[in-house]
Image (cartoon, rainbow, N blue to C red; front, side, top):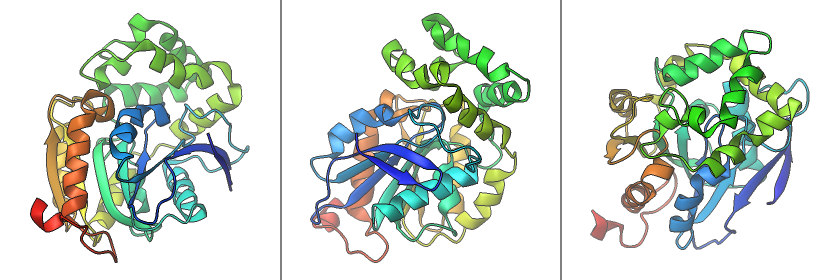
Length: 293
């Protein structure tokens, strides 16, 4: 994987390769995941788009950040904006899952965003989201609590419980993916330090404040929600879409929070329709868009 040095540290990323004839889609993962979450989506989209996936320091990163780095939700958003700047990615379709990071760019670091896609993510008053999110935050307040809680991911049974990772997907998550995602947290104290710093920085009003800026986002936006999501209720997605002046809401069937795993084909079809029908900021409608309408 290529790497890039940013102000907070070095991060990995995947990139299907620049092509001036193709638009760029940037896929953003959530807490405790890495680029592998998006693998089925990358495989589907790469024939028609440049697809870039940064590995943000949210627990499954393999390279710890510098001590003292700002790893709050806003700090992670600033790091994402810096990543877009450093790669000189323009008019991107920014797609977010699980975490609410992309929302925090709006009105602050959104110059390079041509379209915004929010898929089953932290939003409004659902932060920390669900039982899983609240449990992680509570554990971060107790000395050694995060380390003890993470031990549950050594067990396929415990990781697959509905109150844990298993509740985020409709079907069982392959345990090799769970091991991949949680290996850095279980083996590297510095990565665990980063993760704990993020959890301890949680402010319940983070995405309520962000919602006010969403009202002024003047570019196309799609809110694509897992129809069977329990941690991020569809009602939250509908409210979110209602805030965006050029927003549209679509439910992805047969999916919970981890839509890229549950129904990548459904998500990719929604992305393709959305991109075909909406020019990015400063761009033109793609060929065939009128036919798609």
